[in-house]
View 1 (cartoon, one colour):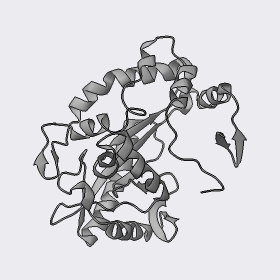
View 2 (view 1 turned 120 degrees about the horizontal axis):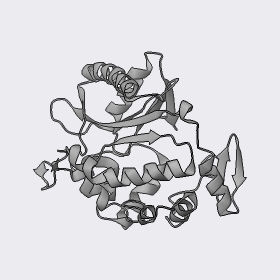
View 3 (view 1 turned 60 degrees about the horizontal axis):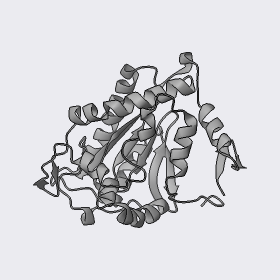
View 4 (view 1 turned 135 degrees about the horizontal axis):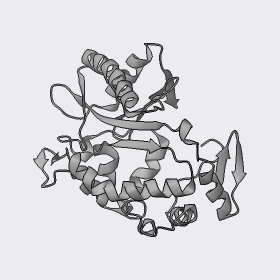
Length: 270
């Protein structure tokens, strides 16, 4: 059974048209467009540069929560994130710190939002002997020495990644990235932006290559993060060939998505 969450009820999906309509419903008039940026940082010990253990990252979250600007997010008894009025802080599998910033009308707003966030987190890190690294890959700490963030979903994703490629768990625990969410006004506009984003990928890899070291050694790649992603999971990474068709639409994306193996299923809130 496949369901879409709409408001507070689950809708049983019985046709591709429902999935296509779900995508189409995301269109907004240009006057309502925004830019959503998600920024990941590596949390390391200020003295050694080694990845911080989860208990120290949990203390960092608790320190930020004391400001009153954030509501704690817990899984079981563990503090795994913070929710603010217009943004949130979450953790990637290896404890990478991710800010999902406020919806902004332009890049200047995104920059101000990020700078405010970093200023507060840096102050909290100073108290705890931590520092943030804006790199694409953890340069020093080996994979097996990085703790897993205590999220149930990672208990599923971790073993799955060992079956799909030889660097899936490195992607989860040793890499950090930057994601951008953009609005669209129509199906054609959405597909045009997807096509352009795919075409720009090699340029962006070159412009932002900042991960030449891993496990304390030069890797031979300026963007080790790019190499990691190319060896993570061929079912859900890489280029989308259907975008080469200028007539491609939501139906083509749905067909692609339905062919991707499912990670997990939510039942009864679990």
